[in-house]
Image (cartoon, rainbow over all chains, first blue to last red; front, side):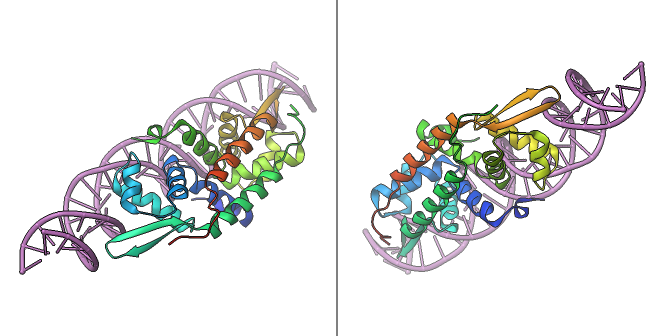
Length: 108
Length: 108
DNA sequence: AATTTGTGTCGTATATTTGCGACATAAATT
DNA sequence: AATTTATGTCGCAAATATACGACACAAATT
């Protein structure tokens, strides 16, 4: 049913990045990880007003896009940002944003 | 059911912007409008692999966030980017992106 | 060896998004 | 005046996203 795949690959990828960032919980996770550098899964769900299960789901989505990565250490799992992907993300977004640079004012 | 409102206003707003940009159709619309400066509604749906109704819905969503604006001209409606809002959007996004600037490499 | 701790997985409920056809309507054209 | 054009609105179906409790399980602790 979804017709997302009928659009240019370029746009699909950019949209997918935007989508990953379209929920405040996921933004909060990224921000928190940027601060703490590394932390275990439980610390994140303590930080957010959501159940552990829901936070886990959001983590999974961020991991799917490789924006973060998890390192299983015994019973705990350390999460951290993936600097590489975050870098690429910024490039993509800046690329798109410059494409819609409406240098002039509104025309209608 | 949604718990979006339990997060900082700041994050909510940024997430809302990302959400508006999370579908390739909406990105395509913005890109197209950036090129043509102004065009009528029908031109946009001709351009996209979606029905007129669906395109109209996406236009409505972009209009809700004031990223675009429509000017009814008789039987036609001219759409164009809202330079003001697009400018603010870039500020917000760059603001957030700088917050997750992981200067160093992955830590786990 | 039994219990606790920290995560992960599954199933489920509800809400939202995506997509469309059918209909409505007002302006332009014939 | 009748028809065509361009857009908007409504209601519906299917897919996805959001949120959680219950359960599973391995490692650490007691």
